[in-house]
Length: 516
DNA sequence: GTCGCGTTGTGGCA
DNA sequence: TGCCACAACGCGAC
Image 1 (spheres, rainbow, N blue to C red):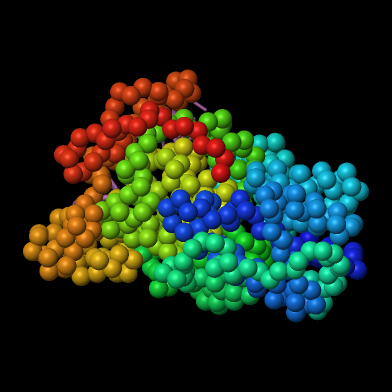
Image 2: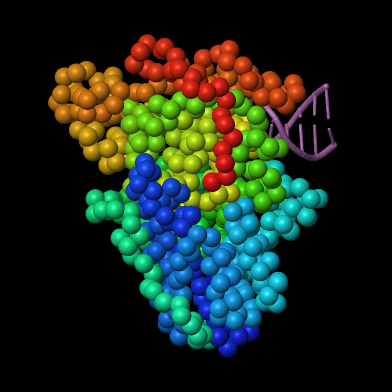
């Protein structure tokens, strides 16, 4: 549905080759990665992708076509150009993509097409609006606040919902071996039998079903307020969990948006952006637009909208955070949900991102790899937000790793589910197990420091230190825009167990990261 | 220069 | 559940 590229292809040709190229950049197994998967994608997202491809193939077959799965040896554009040439293609249709990696990849293909006399049609259909158009409307610069974005954007165009019962058949594929969509086990990630399978299945069929189920409860849709959602809800998440389907193109943002509007029309009142359900789709477009119009959006260096803050590396804290071993059950439960499900509630993401110092884009990379809805523009945008580097600047607002979760889930059911070793810890101590008397720990069969880690940092000291350093960095940005380079103050996170001694600084300021 | 505003803080209190 | 103080940021309209 809402696939103008496919629609154009079927209208203008007697033969259509529906191609998906498996990209080794995303799929090549990396045994050195901290959890199963490739360097850039955890198995949860790869599984979701393969499920989506199998569903797409099945749906194409119902229309008399099929998916042609190509495996790129190295560069995806090489594989596409070879197929264009070998199959003597006259017109190439694909959805445009604004991520820098995709832009470079697609440019190599369109350059080849232009040189070979192949017609190219590349419509915008991944987002509600065309980011380039919004930037132009706004005077050549992306709107940097949500409100100005919404004012500039206006109403999104309607989805392309042409109904058809068949597609042109595929053409002669010559010597190409037509393989089915591979199974996860065939991609070489090792023995995955022990891996938890997330409760979300990929594919357009599942996406449309999930959307209909969400929209069925009209009162829920009309009253939806994102900040009021419960991040600890896991049996029935507080949001639609349609983001992975949007990410993989299983669900059209435009179609979803217009279905939400239909619901609004049938109810007396409804919430409004930014907190409303439709407002969430506008947030998505906001980050796509800013990311498209901002060079070096994914990093601090050379990023004009990003505050220059001298982040410190704390390898010990980072690894504990990544692996869900910080000693703060609320934080660890969220990170374990991330690794197992590839998804957690937005406020849970805020909580853990805030915890990992205010900032440090190392965390960005962990999210990017493990989330099934991993999205370059949105992930980077939100890490800029949470780190008070851009968009949001109230660095005194810090999520407590103890009281924030407790507010929603005083009994700690979420923690008990994702951290079974804590399942018998009394609720008085479940958010701070290190405060439980030894007799209580013994009775709960969970000794802190043995069965569950001691806190890696003292949150009180660490957040105080963080505020101080943010204040210094902001002051420095006001003065001349030069980041604080000195090493006058302590590490932003301290060890808890050694009485507040500083963790040795492995480096002064963060190295700019290569685009990943 | 001033002032109002900004999706999603915490802790205390009614 | 909602309101307030706390301490307070940058942005953008004026």
